[in-house]
Amino acid sequence: MGITTFLSGSASVFGVPGKNAAELLIADLNAKGGILGVPLRPIFIDEGAGINQLMSEYRRVVLNEKAEVMLASVSSASCLALTPVAEDLEVPNILWDCSSPRILEDNNYKYSVRTQSHSGAEMLAAALYLVKNKADFKTVAGVNQDYAAGRDQWGLFRIALKALKPDVEIVAELFPKFGAPDYSTEISRLQALRPDVIVNTSWGGDLDTFVQQASARGVMTQATFVFPLGESSLQRLGGAMPAGVIIGGRGDHYFLHPKYAQEPAFREFVERYREKTSAYPIYPVLHMAQAISALEGAYKKAALTNDVPWPSKEQLMAAFRGLKFRGLTSEVSIREDNQGLEDQLIGTTVRVPEYGFAVLDRMSIYPAELVTTPIGAKSADWLSQIRLETANDPSIETFEAKK
Image 1 (spheres, helix red, strand yellow):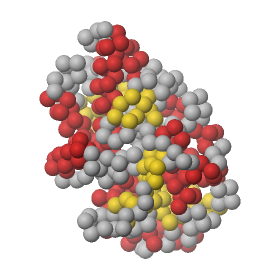
Image 2 (cartoon, helix red, strand yellow):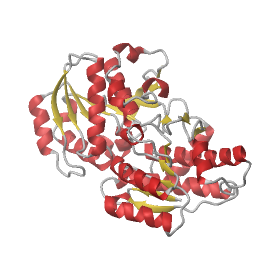
Image 3 (cartoon, rainbow, N blue to C red):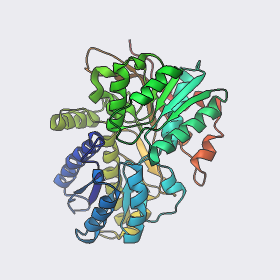
Image 4 (cartoon, helix red, strand yellow):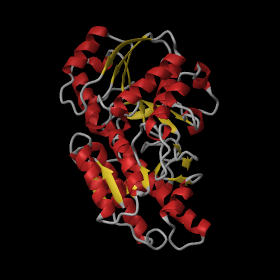
């Protein structure tokens, strides 16, 4: 199996944990005999090398290394480039972390399946949490990475927010370069505008750099900040992340998950991962767990359904549809359009003495069915029809602030 992830560049703070998780989980699987008696051999490909090199390596691993399954990718730009390649090569391709809804909404791919949610659900959950918990705001500014996912995410958040709160004023839409080392221009603009809410949909090293520079200039206490993808940055940012910031976990992924943190299997994995890496697992780790769990489940389902010792790639892809599986948190299911249904966890940061970084409190879990675009609809169209009462839907689980 080939696995694409960031092994270099600013996004490696996000991609390397995914690789660490894959190594740990595949070793566990192989220790039990692999999948249907076949051990897995992972071949990692660096997304940080750029799109052209990535596409070349992807082809090489399939054609020369004879990979039977590919897991791609972290970046939506990478997934948008590689899904047509997977169709051309007719190789099963698991979208293990990328979030653009356009990949499956605008295409009918035969060989690609997504084992987690997409940015439509992630942005809607963040907007619902904001209007529920910080209702009294009038102005919003957005800061987003200037690439496919950054523009998609802000566009979807903006549509959902305007549907939920039509009178809100968007005072700035900023798109710094992906991987930018200096946000002084954007921070100066935010200091001048002083919006009530600042939304930053960035992830990885870009979000870390923004928060460190904004914190150094005192901006982090001048507005309510919303980081829909911020869970992966909490440990790295240490003291730079203050209390009161709204943070999303891209799925219901969090090492202090209010429902699973005390579950023996979850605790054991957290401890083993920390022993291997000296860090708590972040959401790309749990997305990798979901992808490998789905892969194992689909192979077993296909073998059983077709009464064969090892299914064909067509039988494998058919088995993904309707598959229910669990990584380390809540159960995920795959729809007929190959899109995964995954719950969304959002919380607010607090500072506690047990950790040297901010942790989440006042968490809410939004069920996948409530926040995921229906089959056949476009996320932008569907989000424009969302109404404010959705923020109080009884299916949303809330976990009160700890004393």
